[in-house]
Structures are given as C-alpha cells and as structure tokens.
Amino acid sequence: MSHFLFNFFALFTVICALGVVVNKNAVNAAMCLLLCLAGIAGLFVQLDAYLLAFLLILVYAGAIVALFLFIVMLLDMQGGVKKPFKRMTVAAAGVAALLLAAGLGTLTNRGQLQAPAADAVPVIGSNLKLYAYQLFTTYLLPVQIMGFLLLIAMLGVIVLSKKFDGMEDVK
Amino acid sequence: MISPGLNEYVFLSALLFAIGFFGVLLRKNTLVIFMCLELMLVAATLALVAFSKFNGTMDGNVFVFFILTVAAAEVAVGLAIIVALFRKRQTIQVDELNALKN
Image (cartoon, rainbow over all chains, first blue to last red; front, top):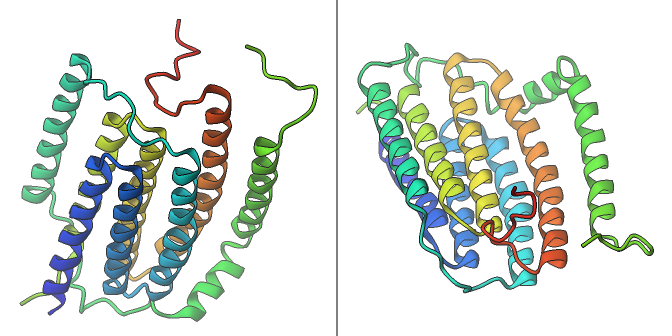
C-alpha cells in the first residue's frame, strides 16, 4: 500500500513539475506548481513529517503560489513574440540533460545508500514536542535570525515597491 | 511488498531538481523562471526530510522549517523586484533585459 502511494505521488509530482516547465501560460504554470506542491506534501506525510506537510500547503500553496498568481495577473504578460532558442542554448541543454541522465542512472545502479527499511526506524518526525524542543534549544539563534530576516524582507519589499519623489530613474 | 526506501526518495528529489533546473535554463519569462527556482528548493527539502526520516534524527526536518521561511522571504522580495523591473522596462522577458550586457 505504501509503495503504491509513493508511486502515485511521485508520478503525480513529476508530471506536475513538467507542467510547470512546459506550460506556455504563466497562470497554468502556477496551477501546476500548486498541484506539484500538493504531491510533495503527500510524500511528506509518507515520511511521517505531518507538520511539514501542513506547513508546505499553508506557506507554499497558500501564500507563495497565491502571490505568484497575483503578480501574473497584475503584470498580464501573456503572449508576446516567441523567439526560437539559440543553437548554443540547445546544445548546452542537451549536454546537461545527458549528464543528468547519466548521473541519475549511476545513482540507481551503483549508488545504493545504506539505509534501514522505513519500518525499521523509529517514527520521530510526527512528534511535535521534538520540533519545539529543537527549535528552542539547539536552533534558538537561527530562529531569531529568521525573525530578523523576515523583518528585513518586509522592509525591503516596502522600499522596492514605493515610489520616491526626486529619485527619478536614470535612463 | 516492501515500502519505498531512501534511494527512491533521493532519486525523486534529484529528478525534480533536474526538472526545475531545466526550467530555469530554458524558459524566458522571469516569473516562470522564479517558479522553477521554487521547484528546485522544494526538491531539496524532500531530500532533507527523507534523510531525516531514515536516519532517525530531527535536524533535517528542522532545517526544512528554516528553508520554508527563507523561501517565503525570497519570493516576497523577488516578486517585488520583478514588479519594479516591469514598471521601469515594461517587460519581464529575460532576452530583453540586457542593459548590463557589453
């Protein structure tokens, strides 16, 4: 059962990720990203990280994708002239794809990581108390820094989106 | 039937990262490039959660916590920059944003 669920979510996620990349319409790409994140959240549930799955849906799907959709509709950049790829880009992408395929193939054939089966390890990811304990002891300083980071990001966004008088852009 | 192991999750994570990477390489729309960047970030978090689960530690999960926060801040600032860019240049296609070239 768990193997079936893994296969289902993995396939779903990969197809939606491909949808993000190949979709011409930016709104459809954002919708594919949303579905892809839902699939990843399903995989997180399989890995017993219930809180992270919930946060992924809340933060990514709820806030980030909504922001993306908002900006896509605000800028309204549909259509436009489609330029073909440069030959150099195509060649570079082909080489990169071959290298990646070789890497993934090697990973599956040779690079088997030694890990116990999923049933053998104790389930600790679902324990909320452990998150809180880690966040307020070992990772207390990073939590503070994250708070400052969010504050700075907020100030930065305000400064970026505000129009100042007398600071007309140089042409 | 055995349940999926660490290798499957790492493979899936690498595959998603590769898909996002090719999106960043090949797309011309800045917004879609940004979405593909987010995809790469989420692929990395999947690997972290998988390692955390199979090693029986909490650190990977807590790290994903921080990655989510950074991603939220990054998206806010990045989209603000894209909007400012659009206001100034009237385009968000990367081909036409070549003011620093030459």
